[in-house]
Image (cartoon, rainbow, N blue to C red; front, top):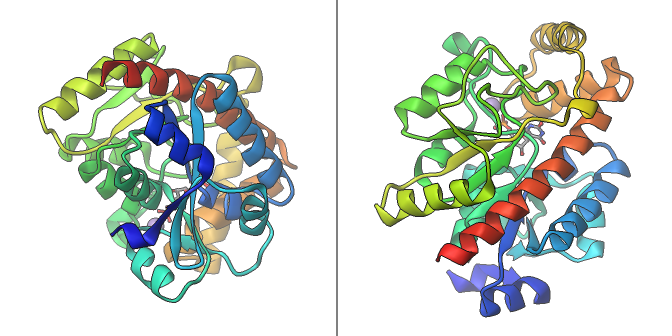
Length: 304
Ligand code: PSU
Ligand code: MN
């Protein structure tokens, strides 16, 4: 297994000295945001994690290797190459064998973080059950991964391009806890609330860390969703964004967008229809998640 994994010097040293590490995905760079904001944001998020006492480990597939921790040049390649594949669980073996470039989704990043022994992962939003899934069966592999892989995912809740209610039902069936960080309502990415409640509320990093430790000490396999609401000053007006998401969904339907292209198409369309406002909110919420996630990683490291 080791032949497929390579670590940056920074991450290697952190692993050896028992420092807190935060995993970061790369699909958000390649398929979630446009260039150059994607690369700029990726670098800033890494720095926020360092400033908050942890070490960032951005994960991607390059040169037949799972890279844990990327150089500036590698971030640039992921953010500005036309031939980077969106890499989820099913894609890893093929991309490694054929030495193609892959940007890891939440699911694939969880797998790679777990292989490296990293338990805390920060991102923007997770995939989920898409609206209309009762006929399309479009359910993100992120959810099955949360069901089986021991990594905590700090995100801004579930985006309303998804069916949030069905996403919560799926997670409940699989025994994945959904924790609200300083909130009782499940945030909906661009907005601080949704019509749904989280399972549990935690008001500080220590409580989250203790919960992760107890779960995994009991050998209860699987991840945890930590939902951290976007800051008030960065949140979007609910009716405005709902309207835009409806339009984006209608266009995806009309154009017959399917499979792995659905989420990137919807994110791009929402950005276009909001004239870039969704991108500003997206960047702000990822940075906020990085602050909270670093605190959780540091608190967890003290317990193990
Ligand atoms: N949501 C976002 N930005 C993203 C993604 C989701 O706001 O970049 C990406 C993540 O990498 C996530 C993936 O794991 O999309 C989910 O894709 P799918 O629905 O095809 O599983
Ligand atoms: Mn899908």
